[in-house]
Image (tube, rainbow, N blue to C red; front, side, top):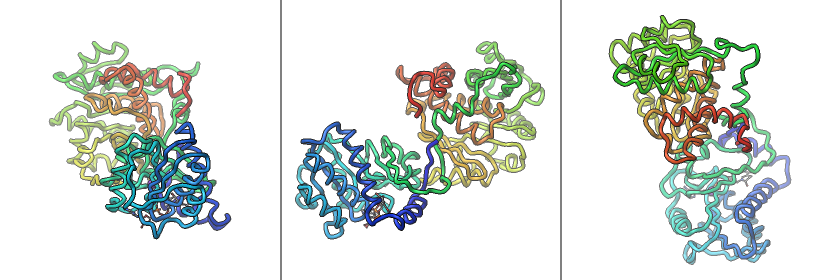
Length: 481
Ligand SMILES: NC(=O)C1=CN([C@@H]2O[C@H](COP(=O)(O)OP(=O)(O)OC[C@H]3O[C@@H](n4cnc5c(N)ncnc54)[C@H](O)[C@@H]3O)[C@@H](O)[C@H]2O)[C@@H](O)CC1
Ligand SMILES: [K+]
């Protein structure tokens, strides 16, 4: 499990640690960790051309101290001071002692000729878009071929929300201190942070603001069936998806549920013919969900249409005292009557993409975690807000940010697959927020496996789900992410 802590949480823990450690010790730890990661990434120090972009706070201090270490190892380091009068004094002195070149924006030619660019403009103290001199330096430095490494947080990225301002540093790697901040793994910030490396400062941090599951965590939530299990004990999921004219959503959703947890899947709806042809393993009926027989969780909504019949079915399923996942057309219908969810006592999982989320009446500015959380609290439901880094929030504030996936998942039908995966996990009896988070993780892993062979379509995802389950269990010999 990767714990995610906000800038305020890190500052509070740092304040405690600072009071207990000699002056400068924490920054030394941070800078030593930073230099170590840089050396590992670059593979050498001697002759390495390094440019430091140095801002006016402690983030610049980290860059200066790390630059001094690299210079002592033989790197050709240039420190560009964006605000020379306010550069971290001790860090600057160390850099000069190590024999590095120190320049200001006025004589910063050749910025684009570095092998390694270290962004120490702003960290958790940065506010808003980068000032013009900083934005200009970023523009020139990133024009070259150098490896782009951000110190703590890419400058111009909000550490908590992942909101990316114009001109922000597009890091390939981010070396972050004390704790991984949510903004490095969510929203646009994820793309700007690149690979995140955590330098442990030994901080005593409280409960995390959000968490990211690892393969091992998901494997622990998905025990293999035991000798005493039968098709019922693994969880029976009911699916109402697709229509006679468009059976695809029913086929994909049912297939995904079967491939995730092949105990028993019941399909009830008008896509029955198509689903039966595709999945002889499912128990298929064209009747209403309430007549489908014993089910432990329902999925309703993908491709189900928005007519009166669909509205009746949605109300009927939400009236059952069972976990229910609502997606797609079901969310459109729900937007007219959110009380259908608010009044439930059994868990509900809603899986909106951005447009569906705003259609439900919630604001989606840049803060995806905050938005998902407030919707979850308002509705008393688990909200799985789809995106490049899907956010899952429970009504009690429990929050996960998904760490798996591939841009190739942005294709028709992949949402239907996600609904089937999460529905199957809900039926196993997992707490709804964990079922949703684990489902998003598996779905992303399946996407990565399917995309290894090129562009993927949704049915490729279904086919790769068993391999994704195997993969999270450590079955492919990869280290756990
Ligand atoms: N507090 C601590 O104990 C530790 C802090 N560390 C480092 O300290 C950083 C936080 O330092 P600070 O609180 O000094 O804050 P930062 O250095 O992150 O940023 C604040 C400085 O940036 C300037 N600034 C703010 N917004 C700007 C913008 N949009 N464009 C250009 N400049 C802008 C401000 O004028 C201020 O001088 C962390 O991110 C981390 O890198 C580490 O050394 C570990 C220990
Ligand atoms: K930075």
